[in-house]
Length: 328
Ligand code: PBG
Image (cartoon, rainbow, N blue to C red; front, side, top):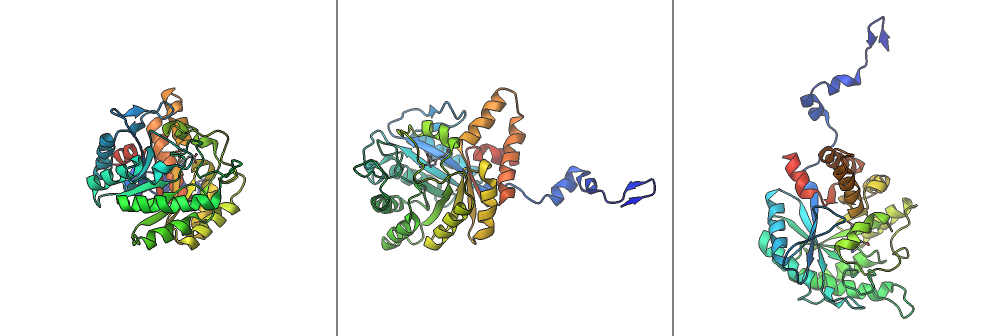
């Protein structure tokens, strides 16, 4: 190992000598094409509305949403994920299915703006549209009714496909949701509309700021449908089931507290794996940076690189546009 008096002969530091050499041997990279920007559009807004728990993120008007999507094309991002916030909510989330519901209108707006320059994705879930804030419809005794919810998801998938979406993102964690959405799309001759399945989605405290972003009405929690943080094997099971049901991409969410799950899912499936760098992960870093406790830009890039290194091919992140600029 060591040559007499000369110190070690094996020196891993040699490959770290210059920036050029470090760049050459880097195992992982982050590229704008791998990033998807989540965007919020709110019905009835005349000005973009800041989200206090997510500094720098806003609820868009229909027109500022189009501008944000056009910028995403400019920056070479992989896609945008659209979330709609309706003016009126009801028990069944009918605004999600209504062709003139805010999300469906926004899909058409954005697709008209960006064409094929970007993959336009939409959240396929009822929680923004229900007055109780759950991801599905409820039984008489207040439980989330899996199978009646599936019927609503099928209709929502048809409405989003009709509005022109490229890829739907079923995020409600109902059993069988991917199969039902695939069947509904195919039956309506939308065989080219793809599915980004929220496969391993955990009942997480890190969704906190998102609930403000979408004016969530939720009381209680989602523990009867979202996964228990204790379980990784179950996350792989969910991903495998979704692939079997027809998912084109499977996703793990949140990202940072679940890097092990991202790795295990990556090793288990033969489709692209996405990870959602969620609102709470964004808010933590932004709050620390605002206090001068962390160096913001390198921390953002390190975060995204870590998610890639864990095995994510695609990352949904509120920093997508900024990261693309930093990476230029
Ligand atoms: C549900 C949905 C949620 C998020 C994305 N889709 C919230 C939830 O399950 O409560 C969270 C995203 C984030 O925290 O950034 N439609």
